[in-house]
Amino acid sequence: MKPYYWLTATLLIAITSCGKVSEKPDEETTDNTFLVTPTGTLGTPADIASNADNVYITGSTYGPAGTTVNFGDVSLRLGGGSDAFIARYDRKGVAIWAKILGGLSDEWGYATAVDKSGNVYVAGSFNNTAVIDGITLTAKLIDTHLGRNQFDMFLVKYDKDGNQLWLKQVSGAGYERPVGIAIDNNGKILVTGYFDSSIAFETTGTTTTAGPAFFITSFNADGSLNWNKIQGEGKNGTIQPKSIKVTSKGNIIVYGAFSGTKKLGTTMYTSGDSDIFLMKLNAQGDITWERTFGWSTTEANGLAVDDDESTYLAGDYKSMLKIGNITLSGDNVRNGFLASYDKDGIVLWANKINDDAAQTTESALDLSCYNNKIYLSGFYGGKLTLGNTTLTTMGGVLQGFIVAYNPDGSVVQAQNLASRSVIPSKFQIDNSGNAALYGTFSGTFTLDNKDYTPLGNNTVFLAVYKAE
Image (cartoon, rainbow, N blue to C red; front, top):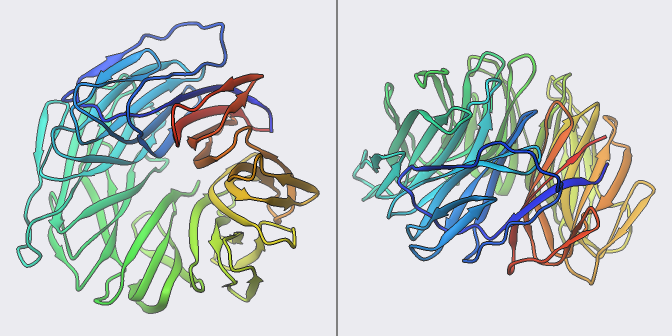
């Protein structure tokens, strides 16, 4: 893996501009590495999307009304509470535009994606009211048996210059929370998320379930509904998807976690604590196969799909984990894992990330496929052995790392991220090999022989480098 070529770090602060876009024109820069240092309270990174020319980030910001936050040279002012944001950076690290999706109530940005034309999509939730590009959305009470509606979902599309093309609202009883967006080769927008017991899209009416469930929804490029599927029905327990991907053939991969008894496809599955589900659907939303696995305290955090439709899933577990016919042992700490499924849902292999016998906490956070390799980002504490490479933490705190694997699960190379207490929450490599990391750090971050000092605990960072 080649070194980073730029980094931007910021304390993301709650900001409200009622949809106003602040824009910085494209410009040449001679400094490949820079740091943005506004003041205020911490923001939360949520998702990242990229193409050959740009990187987009979304998340939520918090802080007193009237405080200024800077995305590079783009300055916005706070409105108070929590607000969602979307920001576009070019490949030199210059912030092109940024905007706030929010109002006086609370809004959260959870997912983003970019299509082939450079249009960007953002999904999030809000309570009470949200003001997005001057349009006021009001949370709707669809079902009265749960009392007031807690959160509604929004989905908004912008062109590459930050102009809104359309805005959608999804309502229900309790909450509606999106978690992932993917764009297929035909420009369809796939969104997944979870809800309480009823959900209403614009043209389908209200769908009511016996308990918490999740949706997989396809929108056309103009924002009209293509189809909507509900999965995970069942009165007992909870179920939450975590990510959605689209394969090169247009099939859809979704994974998440569930507890209790839940229906996936035509089969009821039971989990005593929290198990993982993984499913493949065709372009019409019909399930091709579904799989479940887990043990006590199993979490899956990263999903990637390669050109052959092999699926890779990563996360962590305690004590023991069974995936298909493969059993992984572990300590009573967080043990990272990486597993591979073929296009038919057959487990090809599953490995514990750390080859060291010493008890070490580690967790895989995200995955990305590029150039016939699988790249994994995560964090650990202590010592981490990855193939022939042994990594150690700096100063006894949690340390971020990146490791590249071959499709058979063998390690190609691994490296520490050059900072103490770094959590690389989101990781993506585009088709041009531009890799982007989005997360938080608390110790000095060294990039291109430059040291970056955090602005407080869990300073948000965005770093881009070339993958090999």
